[in-house]
Length: 586
Image (cartoon, rainbow, N blue to C red):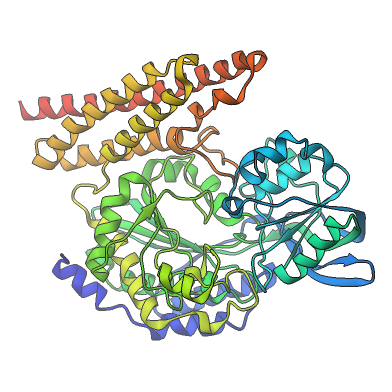
């Protein structure tokens, strides 16, 4: 149920101010930093015109800007696109074509598991060994895990066959943001071309016939100053604490549904909250990212690095605004969020729309840049096309533009935006941010996480059998689950003061999110590849023979130590808060 304040602010959401930005952005190709910086200035000017002050940061980011690309079979030239961060081959790569069929489930698979991508038979029959020196042709998208795997296999180049009539832009680097010295060796060293399905079928036929081909790609790569606008709306009670609302303003082409609509939603929310800033207890920061597309989340990674300590100490949560307000997107299915936020986020959607959302864990994408710091996150895209409509139109899966297959193509133009859907999505984001900024008691529930942890360890133990004992991790998880039950009883009954309970809930995020979602240390960035839950204990022992089993068991032992230590730290943090609460009530 909405409160009077919530009703008042939601009623403020309009369409004229944000829609004007969409119309302007629909004329600006926001790939090159020059146009991106012009777009950032427009955001700042529009806000300043409503009296909202904007800080414009100017980080220097490593960006990769695709140019012309083509595939040549004999005298036939086929149009292509080169994904960002691939290696330019302006003189062309000539080699025999080699086709490998991608399994349907692997089209969006960010795994480096050859059996998952192409099937166990392909691996068993030595298919990997036959790729070296050839141009590999396969279906899907230019996802980073695949490309890095093909590079390891020694492919001379890669041709990716998209599912439909259009070619989808993308990036193929596993590096999140600008590389550092540790991640730089993972920078792609291979040339990649993306083609549409009709042309791809011609290339596949040529590969099956044993023909050779030429892959030509052009890219501009370098360091570019990139403007990053930020609005801070200060709260009146705990102004140092803040909710982070963010989305990217760079795009492929004019990128209306990805992400001019998100830029406009954030613009309107900034206007409304600034007008009512005296009604906020905590602060709200709204940030528009550059370098999302051509820098592999370069803007948000810079922000996470530059303001890491402030984020660590003060950020309550982050919410990503990517591709809201798109044509036909009237359902809330597969909404991405972390488990502790699920009840809160689903209630927000329910209160605005009356609809029941379905949810999923966040992908390693969409500027979810804050996992290694340990910040709770919810939403990437929000509204999506209903599945029945997707099937009716014969669309294949697309993660952005509300499911419209214009995503990452030249067709992502003004017609992809929808005013009514945009108003609804704007209200969802506004209500979520407002509730977090004003909550007396944080609405995030770590019991959902502890149950997921226990279930995951149980599954891993069943898979490991007698080859490894995960009982220390399971025991620590069950202790945490028990402590959390006591903690929330005290917090929800008022036996534990709200400020103390909120501090614990925030600390649990910093402790638990890194072990649940990341492999790398805090204040770094995991690769842009799939990360299984509790990755430190995700090693699959059945994949290792007797000679390798001992190494895999050592990997698991070290991973279990990391998990147990974090779970016990979380339990101790709760115990300390409960003890403090008892002393305060004595």
